[in-house]
Length: 157
Image (cartoon, rainbow, N blue to C red; front, side, top):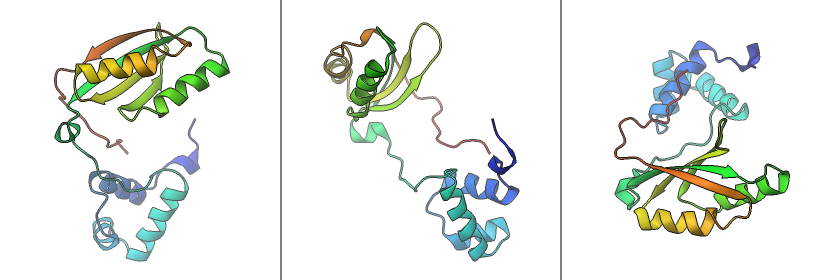
């Protein structure tokens, strides 16, 4: 639940929106767009980082341009939800670089994984080597994305 200190000011929201679109913008450019001084913008950015609102700047990579043009979504059902099983599963998905996102979900499945793989053989290797080898995994179901229609990392603020 959010409280007043969690909310962003109008200037902070503008800075966050701009930085999500282009993290390489200079403090001077941000200050001009936010109608504020560079020193104030710098302090606000540091505050946003300290509060965990924004993380470090990164460069996004087009998976297809680096040979990982297949998006795969894999649902996982666990045999057990005990702490040891969860820890083993989390370690396995942390250790696999092709697994980009992992969500604990409601419903008949326990986890939803998003992977970027080279091809079906690459996915099969990950499935057999990383996931189905785990004693805690009861089963999986896979969805192969035909095409990315919309893909964004920008959170509405």
